[in-house]
Length: 519
Image 1: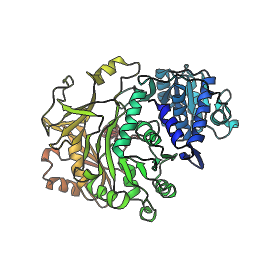
Image 2: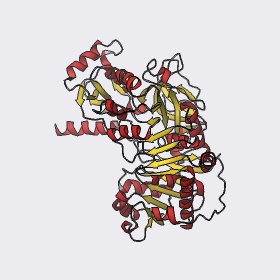
Image 3: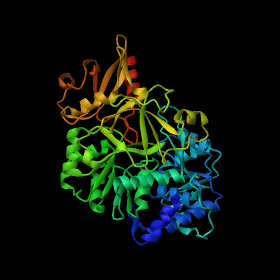
Image 4: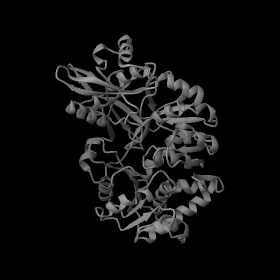
């Protein structure tokens, strides 16, 4: 099976069922498939051939999914770009991928004109403006191509499982973004994995507030619902109130949201007056949820919440099922049906066989059919990440006696204080237990005496909560050694995160360094 076949199969089974809803437009499977095929034909008319790369620099919208599936029908390779990237950042990815066409959002026109001067591989630009009159000279109009191109039903080569379906670039948190190679076999495996683990059904209606340039949004959420013939509702921009209203209006049954978004909705003043009773499951990941908040999610929002762990290189590797949500709070769950996981010695050169004892912290390595085959044009980074068939995640985990995996942070985030290793997640778990703490993260800051000290950044739901009260709570905890207690507290309105909900510790480090320099 390949990606286009997933769409074709749902068209054959459910032609009149709503496949996609965006703003005030709705398409049945038959209608949307015709639109996707017309857009694929338009790309072909522009000279795009199988294996050519097509980049899209578009907000979460119908345009992004139609472009992605148009590429799959044609046999081209989709290259989704984070629409928040600056022109220079986007231009790097376009040059690296060698994209032949760039589809861009109307609000990104100025950025795209700057990109055009730096990305000479792009021969054609397609603008997603509402009106063709607002398209820059020499550029194409998305809506015109998708609606007025004649589908000549040209024969298309059937992709092999090893053929590329997408290049999904990492966020670049440790340097330049790297293009993760996704094959058709990888992405079909991701979709089937999610269908099985979440128990998705044809009657499900999914709400998309996660970016569709991200694996978590497209391959691990949109594609699985498409596979079962469900309905995908795309919300262009996340806002807590708008999301709650959409859940009620569309009778949403499944929602993927990061913990920050879940908490924003729970604490929204209108939460209790909006009917969210249609929800049968929520999937989340990327950060911890406090036990009190988790209990509220189960009691007031949705009884079934899944906490997943994955990465661009190997999506949905671990999942915590609803029946274990409170019993194993803080865990990322156990390996999914298609995943194999080990916790090995954290040394950079450790072999896959160097498994650490139960309860010990080490590096997580994973393998399975969803795992990438490498980084695009980057054999050096590939050799570091992919060894003997295993993905070396760079994430620190432990496994308990029941086989549940617990995240302790990135290996690079480990704090070394007074010669002792401190894992950020173990401190954060205690902070989350403190009444009045809504979100928390910790980093290591330089210290002349200890080498590093633990510094906590906290978002509170109780404005009367002080650093002294939090410190007293930590002192009273029997689960946190004295040397692991935060020595500095900073209160924030929100933690800096990337679109997948992961806290951007580098921004906190940079802010702390700037503040110390100014002092």
